[in-house]
Image (cartoon, rainbow, N blue to C red; front, top):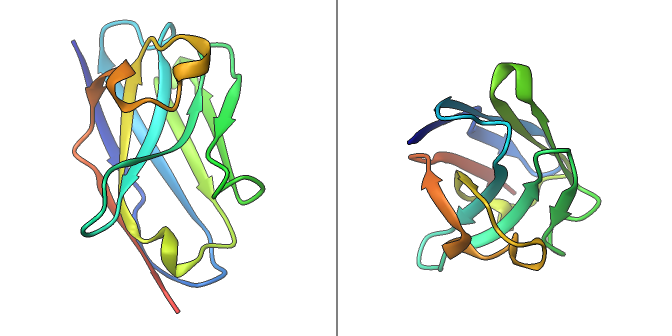
Length: 124
């Protein structure tokens, strides 16, 4: 089992920045691909970004150039740095861990473990 706890959400004005963190405990963190997904009110959960065990990133087109993802395997933590935030980035952000095949890192069902989510609200 892997337990994931997100933090760092909050209220920010458009154009601002936030950094989300996801702390993992339990089984070996290092081998997992870590993903971030988000769900806005009334919408389905969607992929945001993922990072493989050795640091290879993948981003949704909607966040490319604005968000970065990184991980610290020594601290069992993954980060999502969000910049140039827009009101449409408002959502609950979820951290996930899994072993997806390369082209499926953006697929929700490829992830086995999920955090409880952290709210990000971007005001206009």
